[in-house]
Amino acid sequence: MENILSYQKTLAADLAQYFSDRADMKNTNPWHVDITAQLEQYLTGGKLLRGSLVCFAHEAFGGELLQAARRTAMALELTHSALLIHDDVIDRDALRRGRAAMHLRYQALATTADAAHFGESMAICVADAAIFLAFERLASVDIPAVPRQRLITFFTKALVTVCAGQMLDIELGYMRGGVKKRDILMVMEQKTAAYSITLPLVAGAILADQPDTVIRALSDLGRLVGIIFQIRDDELGVFGDPEKTGKPAGSDIKEGKKTLLYYYLMQRCSGSEKRRLLTIFGNQQVSSDNIDYVRQVMIRAQVPSTVNREVKALSRQAAKLIADLPLTPSGQADLLGFLSFCAKRDV
Image 1 (cartoon, rainbow, N blue to C red):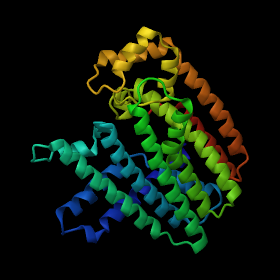
Image 2: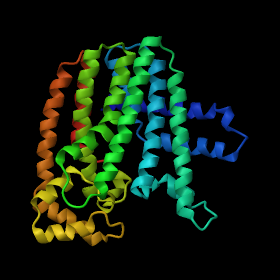
Image 3: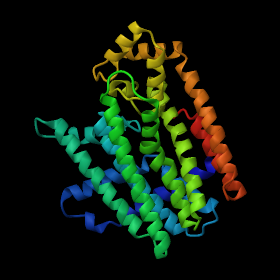
Image 4: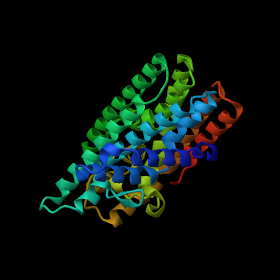
């Protein structure tokens, strides 16, 4: 894991230089300057994991186009920031990385009575700008036409898939009672795995001129690791320490998010428990006592141990796929380390 994150400093420097060089965003409309400042702070404040995975995969498959990998990594990190900003608006989350979410930062600047709408509108504009800048970075990747087309096509398909996964997640959030496990898994695959794991690994492999057989194997691997990553993320949303995660405790409960934890909880709770739980999930005004109640019922129903078994099974499948990939020996070891990190993460 440390070797993968070793690209973080380089990417942070690339992003800082990129924003510094954007002369077209200086000394005009003041919001141009604001977009630059907000995005630079937002990006350099994160772990840059997805961008690091691009650079890692490129080298692990024997690639030598480091500048192209770094520009692709920047494009992905810009896109990631945009999706996080949109996600916080959709989920009404107040915190991101231990700071006020973007829409709340702008809400604090509002001089209108409708401060909330002002904040959300401004945040959406910043996120949209990040997407457009991402494709500017992608267009600057200097590689031959065929791999360029493969890269842009896969990039675009992955992000459209994310949008569909987000829409399904929103739909499930408004549903009362039971949901299908396959729909929960589909959200994990399309909203998280598609761009958080699969896209960076595949992008790096495309830049290293890997064949379609490897791309398909990486897509399968990304799906498995992405589900593992999201399961742990959902656990942290219920049981995590906000001081470590940078996200408010119980936010997924307040949003009524349908996770595997929720699925097993509804399968195993008693009738009286279910009636109370249904008044808690999706209630923005829910108390901390009620959030504690959800945790207690989950533990009594052995929900955490059940999802832990699923993580272990998915991890075994993923490890087998990693063993068959044409990676460098160090790349294979690092990817197995990343798999272990995703399965055991507490932040």
